[in-house]
Length: 195
Image (spheres, one colour):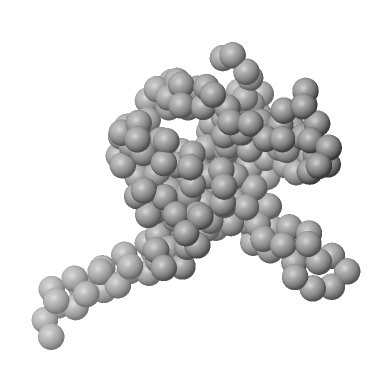
C-alpha cells in the first residue's frame, strides 16, 4: 500500500468518525427532518468548536429557559411555540402551547443580522430534541439553508427510567453533558416579542 492510499484512507476514516451526523435509522419518525441531519448536544458543541460559522438556535419558550437554563453559546433564541397563558386547559391541567406565528420572520431576521450563509451549519435545539427542533429545522431548511441540524437530545435530554428520580430529564442533553450553560440568559440573545 502506498503512502497516498494510506493517507487518503486515514482521512476518510477520520472524517466518518468525526462526522456529527447520526444515522437516519436511529431517529424516530416524529423527530425526522427534511434534510436528515442530526447531532447530539455533545456533537453540536464539537461542531461549534470546529466551525466558527456554526450557529446555535434555541427554540424553547422563554419561561422554559428561565427555569431550566440556557446554553451559553446560543446565537439565536426564537421560540417555536409559546405557552398560551390566557387559556388554561382544564382537561389537560396546563396551559396549551401555541405556534409562534412569527417564527420564520424572526429567525430570518436573526440569521440575516448574523450574516449566516446558506451553507453555514445551523443547529436547532429544544428541550428534548423532538417536537420543536425538528419542525423548526424544517422551516429553516425551507428558507433555503442547506446544513440545518436537529439536536436529538436537546437542552435537558431524556428522562431517567428508574429510581427515585424516574421521570426527571437527566440523561444526555446539553445540560447533562457538561457543556457550558447558565441560568443567566444573554441579553443580546434573549427573545423579545415583536423584535
